[in-house]
Image 1 (cartoon, helix red, strand yellow):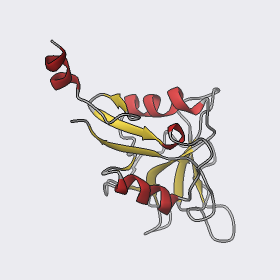
Image 2 (cartoon, rainbow, N blue to C red; image 1 turned 120 degrees about the vertical axis):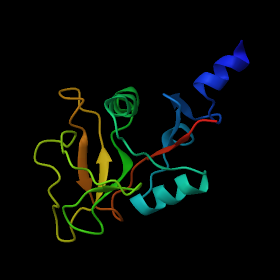
Image 3 (cartoon, one colour; image 1 turned 30 degrees about the vertical axis):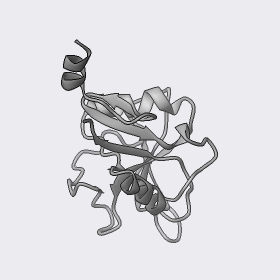
Amino acid sequence: MAEALEGTCGRCLSSWTLLNSTCYFFSYTESSTVKRNWPDSRADCISRGADLVVIDNPEEQVGCELTRMRKINGFWIGLTDIETEGAWVWINNVTEVEQRYWMDGEPNNSGDHGEDCAMTVYRYTNPWKTRFDGKCNEHRLPWICEMPST
């Protein structure tokens, strides 16, 4: 019975969380003090055989945001407009067309050197509007990695 369930539901490495046949790694589970910039966060995910999370459905939006955000104020996700300002593209090369998950007034490319990488934070007032843009190399945050379950 257990083998049948594992085959249907999938399995993840220890310290990873399973949600709908996808495994997620929340970096703060290894160390609550380690925070990295966006490129280093992505490099860590890749070294684990994964990549930064691509949030591409409502279940993932809620699963990645609400269950973890209450403890940690912000995570890097795999969304950027580094290539073309204002054209937000996920790391899987899918362009984000709708901006329904962005906080009001975001993305805003604030500051002298702009903001080209997306982060997500918990907002009890509206759990659907959790994203904002930040400085890829300056901000230090925890991150979320994603890979298929086995």
